[in-house]
Length: 103
Image (tube, rainbow, N blue to C red; front, side):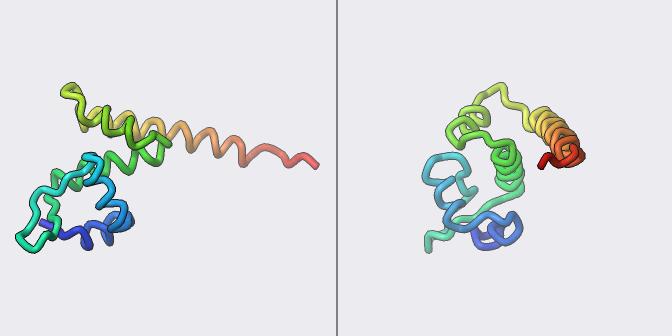
């Protein structure tokens, strides 16, 4: 189990953002200690990875929550689709960068 601080360091997401994700029910900690510290297991970290990929694709948090909370949601399939969308975005940006500059 990792603390919210450790998850923040690993993921590059601020502790405040992780607290917000908890508050809106997007990423709940696996456990909370008696002292109130949030703890996350590997399943929670995998969910965070999916959330971050959806955010990279400019999905709003509300929509991400709906998608991920759907009983039909398959994390492996979603990851494959997200990677493909990122590859398409990369190709599009590469084409834009390769265009001659207009003055």
